[in-house]
Length: 582
Image (tube, one colour):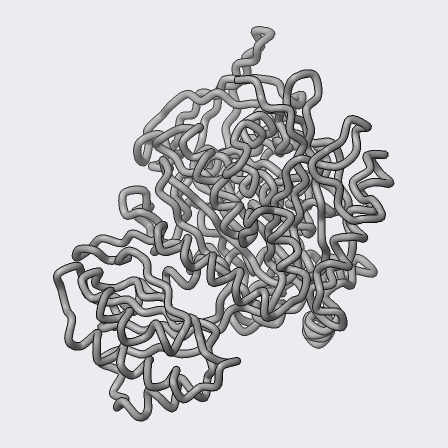
């Protein structure tokens, strides 16, 4: 399918930087042309994204020699003089998390579903209201008026289900909203029993910012988030307009093609899940300054989780709050005083733009990235579709590929560092491929897919993601040094080798980048390599990445010693193994 002759500019507004990506037709196909970047102006002191966008575009112009700005502003559509752009899309992750109060009938049913919906965007649940929370109406009204949420998310009742109890909660929301002044009136998103939508509209539409979406629990044991997510993203835009200036201008440039970065990334992952193996999922991982995001999909079934408290900048202290200092320091490759680690973390919350100044700072930053991923994975595991969950509920399901994004990965000193952060933090199982979004294009491709799907398809097909390598990660435990996997490696030139892999090791098979090999895998002693169960053998085709082919036989999940020195020695050795190949 030949693309239309349309260039596209994608703007991604982060909390520490603003990036613009330019795409255009080259030899009849879409190609990524260049990018520009500037410090973000979404927050203090400007609170206006416009200035940062102009600076990023000027940086792009200097790198690409493609003129996009004129004295009158943005040139769109493009001109015959090869200036300007035809299409513009924008994504945004910057800004304070949306303050949310979730409302439902029962804690383990509708309230849990409302929490799931809230976690698909950049939000912070500040309180919860349910029928069995033992509060009376006046206490609930006080709670809402004191918390002043940006959004009240209401779920409850299957279609044709509960009505009276839910309407009582709606009445409380209405009274509380009436008491709030105009500038603090919350958005209300109702995703409960659809038969009540008319009554809800009558009760709330005049006194609050009401949004209606299909029931996220239309029947018992059924959870359908996607239609409601689209409404949630509309609310996201409205809240961001109040938090930062310049967004109305961006909306006019993009004709409304403005979404959250999380939404855009999840669109790409859904697309890829239909393109790759149907019996495995696809995952995108974005480790940012303010949040960590996991987007996965299994044959189009999406699981999106955003963790605004797990960033490496303003939210870095949240990693400590979500685990412990000891769980961060266990990832260090050499001893660093606990106080120095804490000082670095809290300094990072104040100066999120700062970069590691020495090897100690870098080690702490990478330890934080690993622990942020571990917390995110552990919280996400129960939300994967039941049919793909591992028997051991503490492990990732079979996923291929896994695409990593975020400056801690793309700007790491070496690809060995990037690879090990993903391996340690995610701990994938079976056979997978690790890839790196080296040009930070995931948000751009997701945003572009709505207005120019041909661009998204052709850029993905142009190998925009850097193949780090195929990973084989057997599941099971044995004594260190015990053979657990026998591999036969068949190369295209006819060479064949056999290798036994021992438990507790991290092994790299040397391959040329792009070299195709066939691996015959025979797990020993009841280990599982994702071929249908423990002990099941199989054959896989693998493509050598920049890190070759990696056999991660360290066990799942990784176990740590009570002796910090032993952990530090292991961490150093694992990195050395990967660095030797690179």
